[in-house]
Length: 602
Image 1 (tube, rainbow, N blue to C red):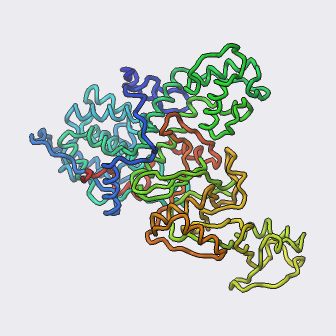
Image 2 (image 1 turned 90 degrees about the horizontal axis):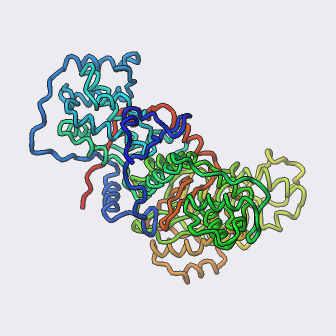
Image 3 (image 1 turned 90 degrees about the vertical axis):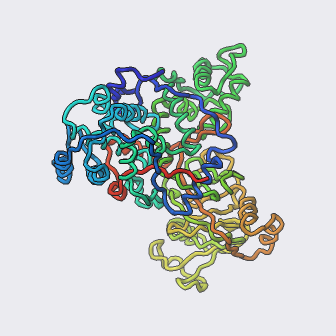
């Protein structure tokens, strides 16, 4: 249903009083969007061409807005008044205008220079278009309050107050909205100083583009084009609508805790389980007889829920499953909002060929020409040996690799074991080298502690090697890579956080076959032959392959449903706190101004 007049006047009406952002009434619009076939990251042909254009110019640039045939409405020149207001913005104590804090104080002088010192908001329809966009910003997981919502809505009803003050506040609201839709609200480097994903660069003057839209009244078009159009982002927005509906309708009842209930057993809590799964769509049938029986149909529904929430799909109503069932709907709303923000950081500049690892979801996708060609499960770092989030390019595939053991593992694991058992190194195919890589003979282990140990530990190629039979190198400061493993049993687990930070691949030979086949024309027989030699062999890729280690805790499925993953590294909580805090634009882009996308080239 549409937003009520009360909510248009007061977008601060929330699903909860503790600072949530979603209006209690659901903004009109489709809840069930068309599913994205075959891949949540698949690009349309137009989008793929657009991204290739972006890659070729190494920047995201501004949208050239269409110019209407009719002349823009005449606007009064108020240069002295505007100039005085803009001059005051250079001082911290001059950045509150009409009771509203101005965030774009560096950019507004450039905008009004492009406007020739004229008022930008004399058209009532432009103000109403801005008010509508601000009210709808929650659909992108943003907070209307960040965009002077109360002030903008009041002006949409009737223009009032000092004209110059009003103009600056409305312009600041538009700039804030364009900025957050395009760049995201939160600076990712502020949360993770090692973040190395690029932010869209600007190659055209945003002041001229925004001034053109204001002059011609194309505010709505400007805002729409600033929004991310990637299929994954669109799917996340659909899930935000869906779970907001759950939230504002009262959420779902809790399933009481208690002893585990196995398939075929009875328990009074089964009725609550059935109701819970029916509400969110996993269970679509009726109770097949006894209401307290965990029957086959309900077991299948429960397994589906477990798979979508990163749990063991055993059909048992156990403690972890009950905990996931009882996560409140508004917490799921916030989880989706957090991942929409990640989408604004990342989804404008994806390459058609890439390897994506979702560290939170513990899976890998391989893309060629914008199409997902293969997926597999992976094992990633434990919460205290986290897999870092970054991007680099894969340059080499190494068969039968040796392994130089990381210093932390040498100190904490190898040295204590070798000191207790002199045969430990030989039994596990390890040997010692000095700092120049020269082999070192037998040593007196009692002479060293882990901290004072001066040697490197290397594991020979072979079946005991921790890297298995192949590794994929994308040089980085963390010494993290993709690799095989001799231990296969952990891939069957639901939560696959077991490594020291590197990424173990369930089917690394298939990954090697696909990558080398694409880059060098290899087939599986050639891969197997390289492994069969037992000798270390490095194969350079003729064209480097981007590798993106990402952290997505919500994954809209291309076949329906939504996967929610545990925030095992605590990254969601930190991002949500920043997303709900006051808006502060990142300094490296605040000076340049907001941006919208350039028109797609066919």
